[in-house]
Length: 285
Ligand SMILES: *[C@@H]1O[C@H](CO)[C@@H](O)[C@H](O)[C@H]1NC(C)=O
Ligand SMILES: *[C@@H]1O[C@H](CO)[C@@H](O)[C@H](O)[C@H]1NC(C)=O
Ligand SMILES: *[C@@H]1O[C@H](CO)[C@@H](O)[C@H](O)[C@H]1NC(C)=O
Ligand SMILES: *[C@@H]1O[C@H](CO)[C@@H](O)[C@H](O)[C@H]1NC(C)=O
Image 1 (cartoon, rainbow, N blue to C red):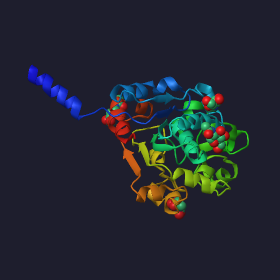
Image 2 (cartoon, rainbow, N blue to C red; image 1 turned 135 degrees about the vertical axis):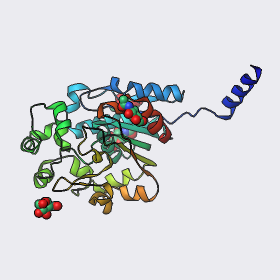
Image 3 (cartoon, rainbow, N blue to C red; image 1 turned 90 degrees about the vertical axis):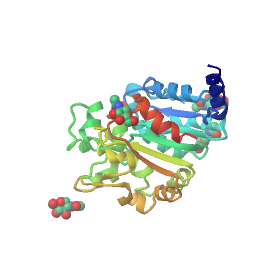
Image 4 (cartoon, rainbow, N blue to C red; image 1 turned 45 degrees about the vertical axis):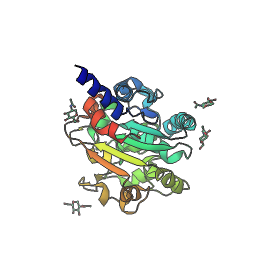
């Protein structure tokens, strides 16, 4: 008994509990902050003292507002949080939230992110019924480009990252978000996007083959369809080979982590305690 207590005391003494830099959580489409509470509680439980901010803007239907609007609004909050934590913050975005988070990292020079974790987010875009039907049950993926690749269609977040491999010219003409933050189309902001992104200490891209919503699932790691719907992995993509946003530089300097986890459905990533314990906590700074 006494020995046990001594051992326990010793263990507590030898393994100090880590307090991480503040963590900001950004929820997915058609949900809200409540969906991210498990992650928040788990971080606080395992690492007491860690401050977790759970973004509650753009919940439910308003999560369909345009990506740029969400990036700029949430980005102002995150810049504020960042200003009061000069040591840097951790940023975790789930699903659409991970693509908003990337927009924030690339756009705000005054947001200082140590670790950015993208949890099953369509970073290279989305072309599949799964995601589409979450929001627009009646639409068909083959023809929805006619709606999304128009001025009106760009008024919804999903349209901003719809990436139809058969209609790339229309994508480049109409899409106001994804081709820009990917520096697929060069703009006056391209250098800033890349320079800001390169300030990350760690980029963690989590996804898996059983996601069933992000299509192709490799989009969570910057892989995507070619013109024939064959998936080309990140390293075969221009964005990587030409290092358009700094992915390659992050990789070559050991800052890029691709994490592939089988057995997790899209709606489980943020609900699965072992995902938090095994794939989120170890990367926090
Ligand atoms: C940022 O912080 C300032 C000062 O604390 C406050 O006045 C402002 O409303 C905050 N902005 C946002 C977007 O939270
Ligand atoms: C961060 O930068 C944006 C413009 O890039 C600015 O509008 C905002 O006020 C800044 N926020 C803080 C907290 O410095
Ligand atoms: C797509 O498939 C067709 C028919 O199999 C082939 O002719 C064409 O070269 C392929 N295109 C690409 C980009 O792979
Ligand atoms: C939870 O995540 C683990 C991987 O960490 C996976 O093997 C398991 O199937 C997941 N469970 C559910 C219900 O998603």
